[in-house]
Image (cartoon, rainbow, N blue to C red; front, side):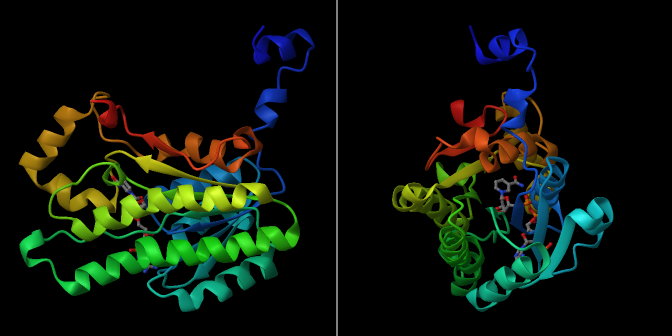
Length: 264
Ligand code: NAP
C-alpha cells in the first residue's frame, strides 16, 4: 500500500502534505526582487514560512505581494562583507534561520577569446564566493540553534554543459554543483541538507538577451522536450520540497527542473 492510500484509509489524508509545510520556518532568499527568487519567496510564504529576501535594489513588488511574511534586506552580494548584516537583520526580524536559498546570480556574455577579467571576477563573486560564505554563515547559525537546516543553491544547465560565450557563468555554476556535494558531505551530520536546483531555460531577466536573439531562442525552444520556456512558477514545487521535511534524506543532489532539456 502506498503512503497516500495508507493515510487515506486512516482518515489522515493530509499527513503526507504536512511534510511539505514550512509553517514556523524562517528562510533567507537572495535575489528576491525579481524572477526565480521572487517566485521562491512567494511559494515559501504560501507554505507558511517567513522570508528575509536579500536584494541590492528594493524588493518593492515582492513586499507588496507578501506583506508581513516578507522582510527585505538590502545588500549587494558582490562582496562577502554584507554577510554578517544579512544574518543579523534576519535574526532581529524573525528570531531564527531554517532555510537559505542562494538564488542571486549574474551572467556575462562575451566570446571566450576576448572575455575580460572583470566579467570573470564579478560573476565568480556573486555566483560562487558569496554562495559559499553565506552557506558557511547559515550553517554556523543552524549548528548554534541545534536545529538542522536546509540550503538550496540555484545551479544551472551549465552545471552540466559548457554553454557558449559564458565561461565565468559555466565555471561558477559547475562549481556550485560541486560545493553542493562537498557541503552536504560535511554538514549532513548536523541535520543540514544541502541540495541544488538546476533550472532549465526560464523566461526571466537572466535570459532576456538570449530570448531577443531570434536564432538562438528558436534553437533552444526546439530542443526543450516540454516545448516551452520555464517560468518562476515551475520552480516553486521543487524549492518547497527541498526546503521542507519531505526532503530530509535528500543530500547533495542537484535537481533539474528543465522541461526535459538534460535528458535529451
Ligand atoms: P534575474 O531575474 O536576473 O534574477 C537574478 C537576481 O539576482 C536578481 O534579483 C538580481 O538583482 C540578483 N543579483 C544579481 N547580482 C546581485 C548582487 N550583486 N547582489 C544582490 N543581488 C544580486 O534572473 P533569474 O533567472 O531569476 O536568476 C535567478 C538564479 O537562477 C540565478 O542564479 C541564475 O543564474 C539562475 N538560473 C537562471 C536560469 C534562467 O533560465 N533564467 C537558468 C538557470 C539558472 P538585480 O535585479 O538587482 O540585478
